[in-house]
Length: 266
Image 1 (cartoon, rainbow, N blue to C red):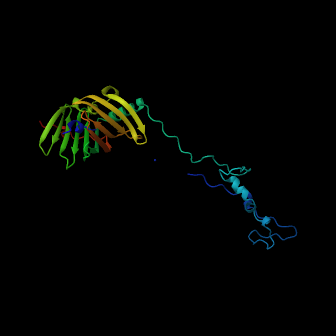
Image 2 (image 1 turned 180 degrees about the vertical axis):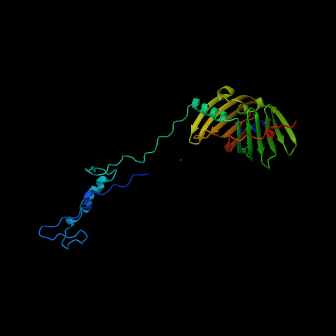
Image 3 (image 1 turned 90 degrees about the vertical axis):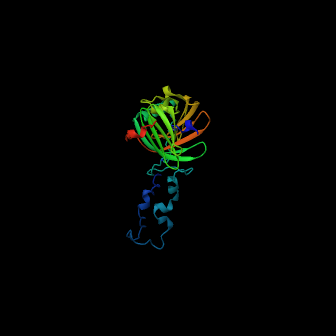
């Protein structure tokens, strides 16, 4: 049984140009002709030149269209922005120091945390359940059926239980790959070896190496939401090479878990 992998694997364009003001003016009456009301139909012998200015000067429209080559702006025409829909510049990636500092701030924001989780093991088996954390040192993974596992830490030891087989294996917290998540105050740079920080639109990943876990060196990838910087996933690769991925949902850092959840029956 892959104990070390199971233990604590913790997103408008501008309005179109207006027509020239002259388009609203009526045509002037010819000499000797009776002025016609503005609502009357045009005289039968009216020439096209007698129509409103907007109709006889189509180039005025074209001059107002953005991007028209050779068009010159005329006095009174509306001013258009060169690129009104230009996207904002992408956020700059966090530096290593900034990412580690924000990760520490998330973990130290509250001594308690509850969350729903989904676990994908190295064998592809999917499990889900509830995570409870109360520092220092108390953690419980409640796996929903049909899984038969339970992982409980009481502050000193970690018990890996199999309800079906009625077995229980005990480990010291210092032997678990995520022991630093259970400390009273977390400082990643001091608690483990931070190997790298990766940043993209999907999240900020902190790559960690821990040489003091049971059986040898473990490698972890902590993945944080790029906006809220809440821990949303982690991946553990144990000394035997088995990988386990945990995804968190519905994180609550205000609810204090029942102390009975962290009791280990020996």
